[in-house]
Length: 233
Image (tube, rainbow, N blue to C red; front, side, top):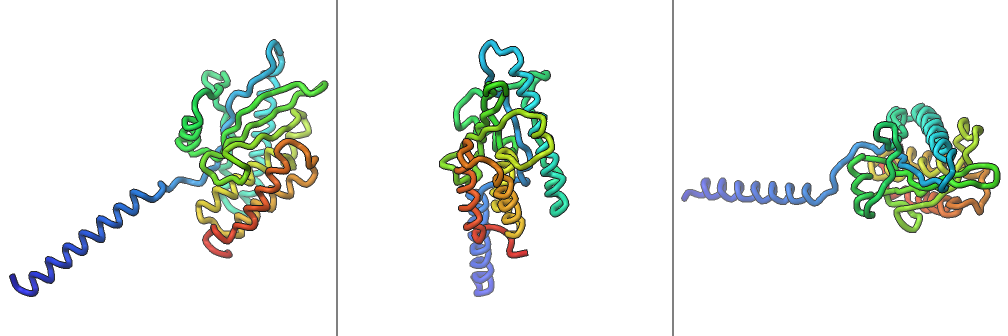
């Protein structure tokens, strides 16, 4: 075999090895996904023998949908993709669907739906009012809340329709920031989302369920923004 043929054979082997290494790297890398912009609401449990509690679940879902639309419109002025922020009611034939399954199955649903968060929880009577305790599921987003879940509370009231200064809006903004970081969005965008989430908690009682944990998680993430994003732009 001539030197030229040996050289060509050698480079062919090297090229093949480089291709194999590249394919192995891609296989080991996490699959890319579109930006997560859907909050999915499952059936909340209601007090037994309470004939009106289900109506309050529908009202709660409408309140959260209104908040999501407000957030999407506001954030969309800075980045168009946030105009697609939406709420999805998990229903079949107009009947709320609850989740029953393992933690892994819940994680699979979050991933398969490319959801931002899953909302589960319960409706309860508080004095003369109704309230929700939402169990927010973050999936594989790196939420600094001591696990994949965070419990937050909210009274179901008409004045909540026009406001985003509440824990549910703040937890959505926090999750958007986590996903934006994973998507290598600009650091300035991540900081803006986190700052707005923190601002939306200012008026809430510091002992309200989930608020201290969420405030702490936002502060931690604000200190970690150098680890994400596409640069200072």
